[in-house]
Structures are given as C-alpha cells and as structure tokens.
Length: 624
Image (cartoon, rainbow, N blue to C red; front, side, top):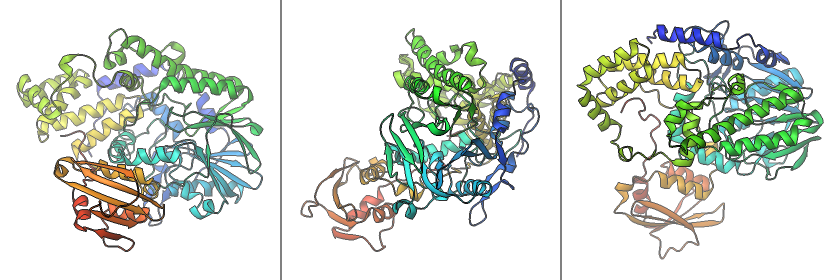
C-alpha cells in the first residue's frame, strides 16, 4: 500500500521535540531490561491450525533513533514495550512481557505458582507459561488472579488452567467483586461497536513498521487468538482483606470505578511487592478509551492512588503492574505513585475549574497545560490516554455531550451536514483545493476537517479520498499518542483500500456463556429492530431447567422486557423449556437441535427471531 514520507512540517515538529525531550534519561530502559531471563524464540505464537496470532519478531524494526514518520516520544515508548521475554521482578515473582498487550505475572508459592492476569488469548498465555516453566521448572498452577474486568487480564485463562481444575478446587480463581458481570457486559452489550473501533485503536490490521503500527502506548497491540473466562471461586470485596494462597499472604485494596469498573490492588507483604493492576502505569491512561466505554472517574482514581500510598508504600520495595515494567526502590515508588495520583487529580480539578468559567470540552483541551513536574515525567506522557481526549471525557462526565450553545443543540447528522458545508464552500473541488492549501502549510487538523465533510458528501470522490488519506497519515506521523496514531493510520488504510472489519473478537463463546439469564435477555433486547416490531405483541415464557428459574418475556411497542416469574402457559403465547446454553444457541438461530421443548404457538418463536438484528462488525467509520 502506498505510504508517504513525513512532510516538512512533521519533520520539523519531530526535530523540535527531540530538542525539548530529555532523551538522555535512560532510567526506564535500565528498568525495562532489569531481571531479564530469556526471550521467546522465535517470537511467534500460533493457533493449533498454524495461524499466527502474535508476532513479537515483527517489531524488530523498533531499534535505534526514531524515523521522521514516528513521534520520537512515541518511538521511545514503543521500543520499551516491544521488549519481550521472561523477567525476574523479585525473588519468587516473574513476569512475561511483550507477548500480548498486557503482562502476565507468575508468583511462586510453596507447591506451585499463582498466575496474575493471563493475557487476552489462550495461545499467548500458554506460550508465556511454557516460557516460565522452561526456566523455572514445571510448577503447577494453583491459582489465577484477575486484577480487573478487562479482557486483556482474563481472556487467556484457559491457556493456564482448565475449567475442570477450577471446578474440582485444584485451582482458585480470584477477582474483585463484580468482575464477570462487568466483563461480559462490556464485551456483549456494546461489544460489536467497541470491537470495530478497537480495530482502529490498537491497529491490529495495520502493517507494522516506521510508517505503520508501532504500538498502542500501553503495549504493542492485541493478540487475535481465542479468549475465554472462568468465574471466580473467590471474590474480593473489602479493602484490607487478606488471604493466604499456597503459603503466600496477599493483602488486597479495592479500587472500583477507576481504570475498570471492577479493579483491585494487592501487596505481597513477604516479598514487599505491590501489584497496582492498571491504575499506575508508564503512561497517562484513558478516562474514556477511544474504542468506547463508560467515562471513568479521575477523582476516585486519584483518591485510590492516595490510599495505596498510605497503605503500601512504606512496605514496598518493588511495584509492578499489568503493563510496562516495574519500579524498584521505596523512594522511587512513592514518587511514581504520587505523580500518577497528581496527574489524574490535576486533570479533574482543572477541567472543572475551567468548565465553571464557561469553557467547553474542546476549549479546555486546548487550554490545559500540565505543571512542569508532570510534563517532565515520562510516565505522565499521553501514549495511551491523552490530555486532549481525557479532558473532553471529564467534561462529558459532568456536563454531557451538549456544550450549552443553542446552535449546537440540534445539528444535522454528519452526511447532510457535510453536504451543506460542501455546498456553502463552493463544491467538492473547491473543498479539496482549500484542504490542499492547509495540507501544504502543515495545518493537517483543518485539512482533515474539510476532507471529512468532502468524503461524507461524496465518498467516491477520488482526489478528496486520496488527500484525506495523506492528511490522516501525516497526523499519525506527528502523534505522541499510540492510539491516535493507530486511528489516523486505520482511517488512511480504509480510505486507500477496503473496510478491514474487526480483527479481534471479544464476545467469544466462553465469554457469552458467562452471561446471566437477565444479561442474556438484555442482550437480546438490544438487537430487536424496533420499527419492524412496532405492531407485534408477543408473550413468551422461558423455563431454564439448569437454573430452575422461569422468565416472562414480552415484546410490545418494539421493546422486549422480562420479569422473573413462574411459567403460565394459559397466558403465554408460547413456553420454551431449555438450558441456558441451549438458549444461547437458540438466539444464534439454532431452532432445530435437541434440548428445546416448545409448548404453544411455535410461530411466535420464529416471529421473534425474525425481528432480531445483530450488530455489524464492519460498519463504516471514516466514510458514511
């Protein structure tokens, strides 16, 4: 695929950054290399059928000085996160890094090993465990800890244990309260849309290289193997809770509603090692991830970091997290946590100060400037989250999407708005002409705005499409934020070729199987095509044999609602008796397999199924 060189404006930006950044500070490189044991060689992970779902070797180009096509600060971060292999954190605690977006940690106990956060895919998790065992012996997995409810921290669990071992009690699964509910809700309710946008955010479909995907700031990208989940056997509910697992004492701190809805930190007192999950990493994190999510609470986030400092910092000699590299030394740990705490507190408080003075989110994002101590801390740079989109997220959390200007209360949708703008400017050719002028002087933000309107007015206009792709590419080259770069390059890729869909699927069967019956009914309701169902009035009783519960589902006015109540065939149009797993297959369209008893009007079921509209994992983003 055609790619351009960096423009003169971008080359000058990169040169200016190199002069302003403390590139001679190599402390992070020493920390990222510390404790190295061995790399996975070759660095590819494959499925049973031979498909490559992770390729660490494809990032071998991340060496030396930054090319003109990559922001030098992002290049530095990407070189650091590309380091892969087994590392000793402290005696008895090891991490495998660089085999997925996240890290997996192995804590050695009296008889076996505790696994913390087994990556996204079963294949990468199994490869990490094999690398650990190759150098530390064939220790049995005795427990798995999920630090929080995001898929890169539980998805690979079936690569390190089995459902049978968990069910038999041989392996404990430990997680903060609410993990499964939050995990399946996130990956199912809006999972299709989040998955499609995650393809843009993580750049999984992009070519790797100096003009392509160089990382997401938090890690390189996402693996594309098989994800699953196992329900916890022990849920942590209270800060200060202590448990001893295989002779290892663990002290927990709850941190809900921070980087994830369900999240926790924990200390291994005997090893003076603190796991901070994903709440204190070597980047400014997201308050609203670009793939989509609920807006996170930076005020609560900063308060939980303050609490962690008070609870643990005097008893900690090493801090490790689910991403990036550890921090050693009590003074360094305290400074690291305090700066991370101050970062989220400052963004929260200053955004509120400015919104109370009448600025809207976009204005605050342009106005916001971090204090020198935060500007000069590498781990406060916006490689994954950014000051710009985090400030807008805080504004959204408190004020919503509307900025109070009545002219912006009821704008036209993007396509008719674009058509009007293009007409007012003087037609598509004139829009492209103006965009070219902006491009030539390095005003890529304005060029992108103009060309966005042009493409939404006519997605097949060749000159607009070409210049738009070139513009997004230059914005990518200049971005310090890894996910911004991936978004820009993904847009350019689709403008120059075809829609690449959703590379990584998060609503895997193992995850769907963890839906509670109410969550499953909610997931069905979300797919009802309301206008097609306006005139339908249906009543279905669902009897779940394995859960010994019954639900009445009613479709009326295009809305599917449910209540838990005893089945009553005399008032139901149809009664279905089946297991929850059979219900999952039924929703997928399987009406003929065994395990389904139907009493009443059998056409009701087919009528309901006919008005269900699944999500589109290839919906358009950069074109209408």
